[in-house]
Image 1 (cartoon, rainbow, N blue to C red):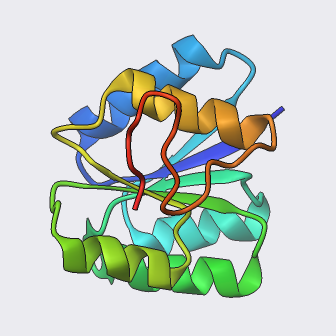
Image 2: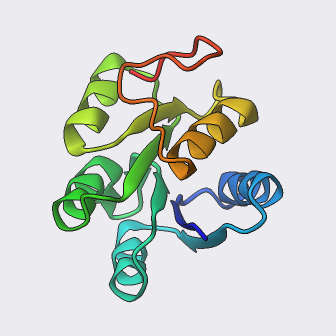
Length: 138
């Protein structure tokens, strides 16, 4: 079983992502956090395998939070989901330890599902790699 944490302050987006993951991965256990503080508290009680994280969070920066998470839990896969599709954000996400970067408005459910499938099967596509659909992740 895979434990996943969604760190997102937008309730609508958080619920949509939760529904997508629940439908596509019924055995996945999904936790939610609305900010960095709650995310770190959840990490203290249960270490997830996978984290979806927004960059802009109340009282926290998702990239700084990613650095903290990866410093203590190197095996957690972090996927940044943000509204800001800027090269400097993408680069900063990877420097912070994120494995993948998606833009909320353009990422499709199939792309997200493909990456999660890859992570769960242990066949990470890797930063800068292109998946079979030709989508670039760097």
